[in-house]
Length: 163
Image (cartoon, helix red, strand yellow):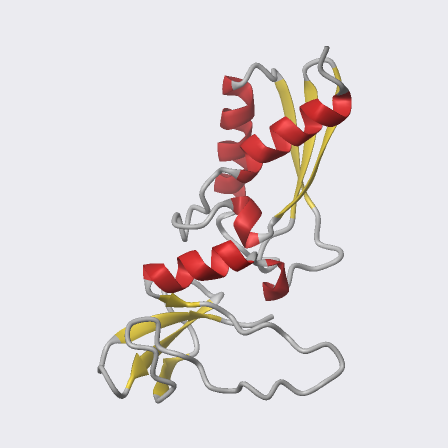
């Protein structure tokens, strides 16, 4: 017999394995936008998502991808709710997600300092590791990323902005 807790964990893992539509190298779980999942009854599931920012255009795609994955797993009724409080921050990105972003060529966000000033202010190039980088544009392919260039290897790269 599968308990609701075990079923919730299994379904949370399935929903969390959905790739982010804008950064398919990381999953929704690794990005930290999958907040929770509840089994409401037989064949009924509620999923809570928090977008990286309130105007994120990918939230609808994330929702439909989660619905599809859970429907394919035999869950007929899936409700995906957008939860804005507490707001998502870049601290929600897992260590594995940060590693995958860097490997993909996107400089991961620096951890935010709670109550103190961060000492590591430089943004490291994901290609060569240099901290000699220049901001080219505050916005890149998506609003949550900035476009930078490494002055050492001269390669452009996205930087996931800290929030």
